[in-house]
Length: 422
Image (cartoon, rainbow, N blue to C red):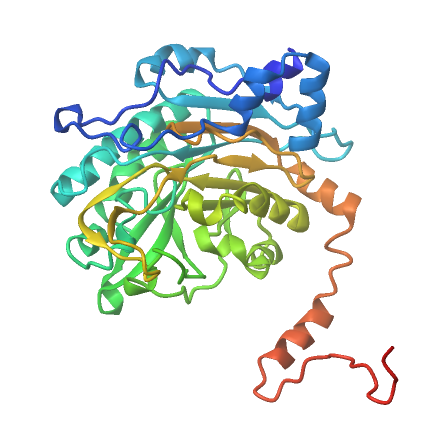
């Protein structure tokens, strides 16, 4: 295998831009956009041909060239869906006392399938059908844990501040239509499914939450995690619909490892990532929905930094395409009203605890990214870098407690006033 195929061959079987299911409606959120760059990798691919240079670029950008998993059988079976599938392998030194703990992780980035003014049931059903196809591909590739993007069953309509019809997408985490739809897939393919949805909490006055449901590999509801940090920036008007989670930082001890879900905006908060590590997470998923004008400069580094700092694997997932809404809305910035949020730039990627990462999926196409990982690398990285040993939780705990006090005084040393300035 050449370093080029290991690190830069982005399209396992893409025959053209992915299109949406409702062609009769003449709508495709991927095609209905201004021209977008495919990815930084595609630019390099077009311009760099020397294998030595490619290997060095891989080293600098990604920490080295990763191996590729042979998924030709999946490519052949699903080629007509025009789905961008990539599959990488992180190597890990063998140990004498522990066997390898190999896990295949899959993350899915997708677009909505029908226009946003279609009936709610039709919008949800179209996404169920499409994700079902991608789950079939993940199952054929022997994926053990799969995670979708934030609020995958609906448009990311929180920019509109409208309650109707978007609140109608909210559903029960435990036995709603989406969870019931996914349970047979989890059992059929022996895969743990992480499903981020808009939750309707009927026990607590029908409150709405931004939630990730975990279904175990036997098709049983295992639990849920909720979004801890809610943005109040740009068109991210999410606090109009739901507030911050009150259930903490749960970690799910599955048959394939201990996993956690840090939903979207929580990736901007280092302490949020840390709490999942303190609870023993080995893989943390970051299902997101974010646009190029706001966060793309941060995207390639935040989940990667979290993996390094906390000695676990991170999986950053972003939706892809543009979504147009029936009514105009404003952004509170003095600019004209508009009907689109912006371009969701995909670029989903996976990072190992030693800082190596996969190339990102496309900025413009739907895709499934697979990585074979060895969970033993978590402890190996912890031993090697010593970040957990040197993190000084006691010191920071005291200072955080002080900072929460009404009478907190910052520790600032000022220059004596009697020193003559030159």
